Amino acid sequence: MDERTRLILSSFANGRMPTDISDDCEYSEELMALSEYLTGCYRFAIDISNGDLSNNYVGLRGMLAGSLKTLHASLRHLTWQTKQIAQGDLTQRIDFLGEFSSSFNSMVASLDEACTALLHVSTHDSLTGLYNRAYFDAELVRVASGRCFPISIIVVDLNGLKEVNDSRGHESGDRLIQQAAAVLRGVFRGDDVVARIGGDEFAVIMPSASEEVVQATVVRVQQQVCENNSELSMALGYAVAKTPHELKKALSLADEQMYVDKRRQKSATKSAEPKPLGLSKIESLQNIPRPPRLLGPRS
Amino acid sequence: METERKYEFSWDLLGDIEMGRPNLGPVARLEVYRLMQFCFRDVIEKAHGSEEADRIFYQAGYLAGQHFYANLIGPLQDLNDFVAKLQSLLKELKIGILRIEEADLEKGHFVITVSEDLDCSGLPEKDFEFCTYDEGFIAALLESFTGKKFLVKEVDCWCTGDRTCRFLAQAAA
Image 1 (cartoon, rainbow over the protein chains, first blue to last red):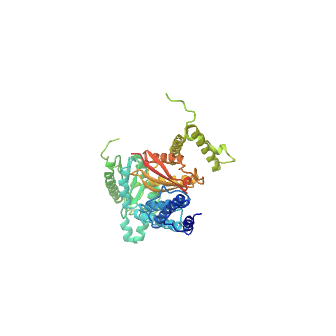
Image 2 (tube, one colour):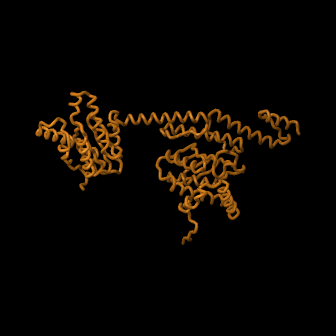
Image 3 (cartoon, rainbow over the protein chains, first blue to last red):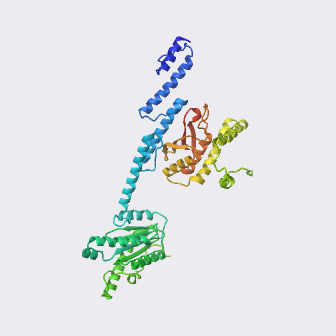
C-alpha cells in the first residue's frame, strides 16, 4: 500500500481528519469521499451539540448520519413539545432521553395539576362548590354565540340569610347557603350552569330550555325546598331568551321577577302571621309570576 | 360513461375479524404484511415502471389515509387533539411512533417523523426513500383535517441509512 494512503488511514483510525489527500495517492477518490462524509457527520454532531437544530443535513446518508438524524429528530420533537406546553397543551409527554423524560413528564403533570386546581379555584365558589360569578358571566357570553336557544335564566335569592347571620352567627348562615346550593345542585341538569353570583344570590343558565322546561324545573326546586327540613326559603324569578340579543335582558328580567316573588312572599307571610319567619315552603312559591315576554319573535 | 368498479374500497371490506378469526385474532406478523406489499410493488413496477408504481402506491396510501381519518379519527377541529389522537392510534395499531418537528397550520407546513415505521424499519439500505405509501397516507390525513390539499415528500428513510423516517408536508398554494 502507498505510504501516504497508509498514513491517511492511520489518521482516520486515530480519530483525526487528514488535512491533505493528494489526488495521486492510492484510493484517493474513496478517501476523499470518506473524509467528506465524516466531515459532514462531524459538522452535524457539532451543530447538535451546540443546540443548533436548524439544519437536518438531508443529503447526508448512511448509518452514522442516520443515528445523528434520529437524535436530531427527537430533539426537534422535544422542542415542538416544549412549545406546545408553553402554549398551554399540558397533554404532551416525552418518551425519550430516559431519566430526563420522567422528570420532565413529572414536571408537566405537576403543572397540569396546578393549572387544573387554579382553574377550579378561579371558576368556583369555595363555600358551595358551585360556579362563581366570573364563570357565570363568561358562560353567558359563550352561550350567546352558541346554538342552544332557547336559553332560560333563573335567579334565586336566599330568604332570611341576614337574620340567621345576625341571630346565630355566620357559621349558621354559611350552612344555610350550603343547603341552598345542595338543593340547586340536585335539581339542575349536568349542562346547566349553576352559580353563586352574590352573598345570598344564585343564578342558573339552562341551555336548550323552553318556558315549559324552566317552569317544571322551578317547581322541582320548590319541592326540594319544601322537603328540606330546615328554614331554607328562596325567592325565584326566571326568563327565557330565544335569541342571543335577548340573553342580557333575560337575566335582568329574571332578577326583577325574583324581587316580585320576594315581595309576594313577604306580603303573604304578613297576612298569614303568626307564621314563622322564612317565607318558606311550597304554598308561597308555587305561583311565581310568569315573566313578561321579551322582545323578539313570539311563538 | 364510468366503468363499473369491482374492487372499490370501503371500510366494511376490512370485515368482522372477531367473527372471522376467533382463534387467530386480528394480529399477523409484520413480515406477512411486507411480503404482500413488496410483491405488489414488484409486480406493479414490472407492469408499469418505477415512477408509475410510486404514483400508485402514493394514491393507495392516500385512499387509506382518507378512510383512516374518516373512520378512526375525525372530525376534529383542534390541531393538538388531532396530533394526540393520531399519535396514540399509530402507536396502538403499531404503525409507528409519530413525532412532530414543525406544525404551522397557517402556512400549511409540517415536518413529521415516524420511527419504527411499519413499512421500512429494519430494511436493507437502498439509495432511495422507500415510504411512498406513507407519503400518500400522511397527505390524506392532513388534507382531511385541514381541508387543504397537501403534498408530502419523504426526505429521510431507514432505507437511506436513517433510523427514523422524516416527511415534509406542504399545503398546495
